[in-house]
View 1 (cartoon, rainbow, N blue to C red):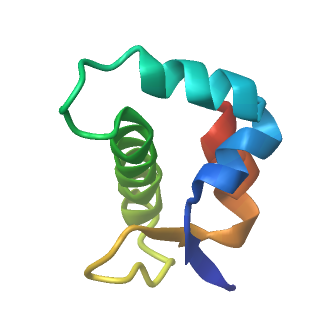
View 2: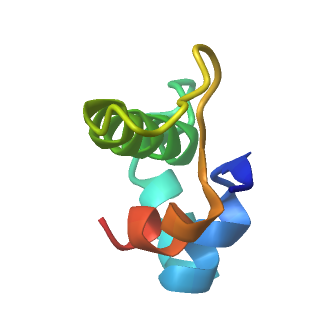
Length: 76
């Protein structure tokens, strides 16, 4: 099973780049990029579910998720 990090392109493929840009612009100026934060939180949630399945070997560090979950993560 291939694992990889979620990207803005993954999110834009599920929503649209226009929606991603609007979400980013809704953040206060000078703050953390809300898209990066959203992707990080989503990956952490998916990894929590993966860790609950004791048969999976989940990487100890990083935010990579199984490739088969990328689309589902972007739907959350």
